[in-house]
Image (cartoon, rainbow, N blue to C red; front, top):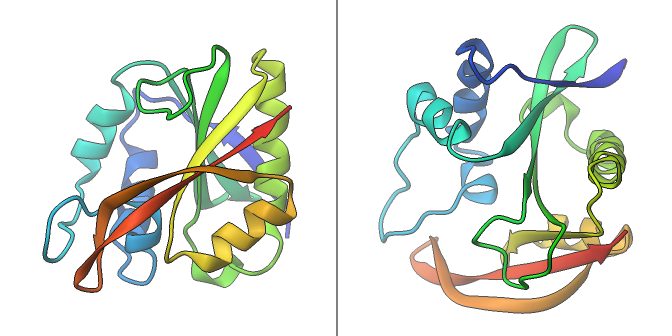
Length: 172
């Protein structure tokens, strides 16, 4: 593996074709996106993802194996939806989209990259949300120094019931 990270040009549609594919993958879609209504989570189009990416300041990076996109990362600076309103907070997300790369250490490399980017951007704190049923991700974040500080009950619909969003943080 030759894992590297490349900031996308948000004026180009091509990266959003990959992001839409991963967002709609039935195996991971309920772990990387919030289903905010009862029933099945609707698929997201590349156009919708493109429009959302271009609203407000957001940095999006592709996780690459050489020249092949295998996932994506993002950083938002002081977005409205952070639970703890501290200046210079980065809200991050990560998706290892290609199944063959899951469980191979890519997420660890991606988190190292995200934390370094946050430092470079002058951020002092990172906040993220992880759904309560995503036990593997929660254990991973705890292992690398993130701690739980809040719960948003009845936030996301999954497997026939409303579940909590766990908010985690790490000071850099």
